[in-house]
Image (cartoon, rainbow, N blue to C red; front, top):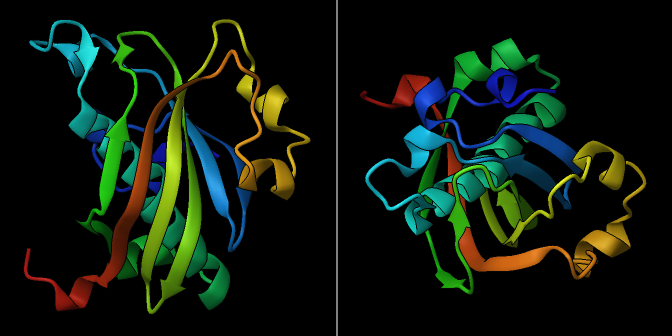
Length: 176
C-alpha cells in the first residue's frame, strides 16, 4: 500500500514513501528517502523537525487511518471523508545522528496508547544501509523483533522519540 493512499498530506509534505511492516495494535515500520527539495537551504541535511514530521505521519497519522478502517469497518475513502489525522503533541526526542539527501531511513513506531481516535507512540528512526530491499527484509519480521528493535548493526540509530501524540479529528468538528 502506498502512503498517498493513506495520508491526506499533499505530495510536497508527504514524508512516507512506503510501509514495510504493520501489526494492528502494535505498530508500524515505514520508510522515506529525503530528496533535493527536502534538504534545500539546509546544507543537504534533512532537518530534525522534518524527521519528527515523518515519524508522526508514519505512526500516529497512518495508524489512525488504519484503525478507523479496521475498528469501524470503513474503506479508506470513508475514513478520509470522516477524519483528519493531526499531530498534537510531542514528549521527548533525542537525536544521535543525521540524514542527508538520498539516505533512506525507517520509522519504527510502537503504539503505547489508543483510545477515541487519539494515539501515543514511541519509537526510533534508523538510517538504512545502501542496497537493502526493505520489503524483502521485513517480510518475515516478527512482533518480538519489532518490540526489541532487532536490526543488524548496519542500520544506524538516528533518533529516539517518546510520547508522539496524534489524533483523528472529525472533519465536521473542525473549522479549517
